[in-house]
Image (tube, rainbow, N blue to C red):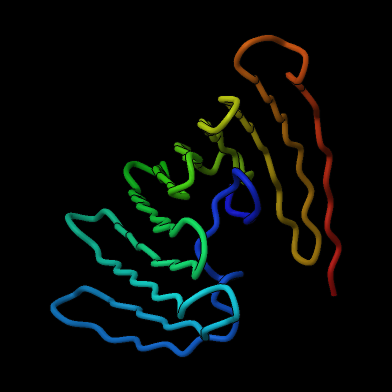
Length: 174
């Protein structure tokens, strides 16, 4: 998703370099505005984000203005919504890079028998549309955590790049 590069969501951080920021809150809405520094190829990048809670749902949204001195300007944007009900954590997000790449994510997570379990679906629209699914089970035990993820990738137009894999992970920290 949000790693930058061609066809992957870029929020303007890479283009803006060092930034100055202003944060404030009014009427339950948190605002965050940043201004990046001008470079030889990019005018100062302006980014605007807001977040609030509405009827128990956490809503966040933002947009950046990336003005390229000789090239195509981009205005990437995002919207995320999170909600918890009856022990389920629900999430929805849309990331639009304004360059033909857009991703939509949906997920649900909960705790079962002392383990964190969840499933996430993502749809990436770019030169090749790709669907992703991740199912995860994780257990934290003090300084150690263990988990297993099942990852599935389905590319439109055939099965040449489709993948299914299991990932076992553990972390031991002190």
